[in-house]
Image (cartoon, rainbow, N blue to C red; front, side, top):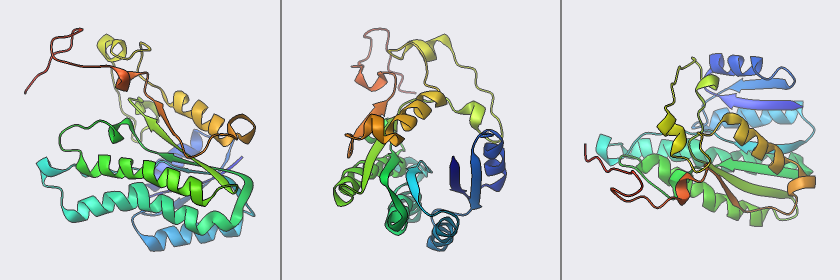
Length: 230
């Protein structure tokens, strides 16, 4: 398996490459908000690969929202990285799509539920859903396009620099499945969607993977839930 990745943090990319010993991991250092970086990344892929059979866009930044006075520039930069880069890569790489091409775009359960000061992030993740079904229609018979919307996936072991996170019993118990999500949960779903033999009849869809958290009706003082205004 060959993987071509782009990120603005070279140290983190090198660390990630060590965690993927079975893959031929190639990385490109660049800012997804800058078209010139995306253009160079695309040109590099076309030079190195005759075709690609999978494209995964999971880049995301969060600039907050009204409560921290996120600027118009903050808002637009978030859209550029979280959504625009995905469109750019599909647009300019479609000429080397394999016949069993699968595109996976990462949204979030935040596209349906919000918290205060979350406008930049949730707007971009909502846009990913629209982009998913639009691309699925435009690329009909050429590529399948689906969106994954994760809930709480504890990625601390894969962060760089490493972070220590102590999860409580309550963190796990609040999930319908009794635990917080793990990166392997996402990997298994991605592996399924990339495999045309297993998921060849699925396109244009949002797949929520959140341990059932978003399916709970939560009101103050019911089932142990308490609203804290602070």
